[in-house]
Length: 126
Image (cartoon, rainbow, N blue to C red; front, side):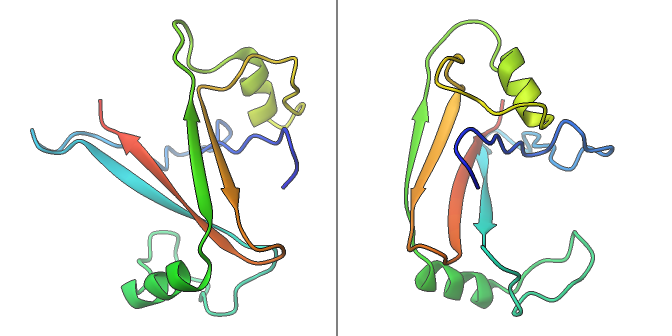
């Protein structure tokens, strides 16, 4: 990863909508994505279909083994939640710079160098 690199979940280039969160009931207020970043391929993860669930004990081991201090910063602003600069960066046409408007949400993680880490991303259901 490099500074200014935007990661979209799902990507604007995805041909199929991979993430669609819909309220399933009155008490359903959100979902949580758990994103794993690793500098190298993890041998403990078998290659399988994209919708294959990971064993819960494997994920719990990762959370214990690769903790990361995370911070979420949200910008309170009116208007579009996705700027033209963010759209271009998401399409890998450019990097974001300090001169660009701030993204709506920024996630930062502090983890051990050259080790995998997990990032919890809460998603509110509209």
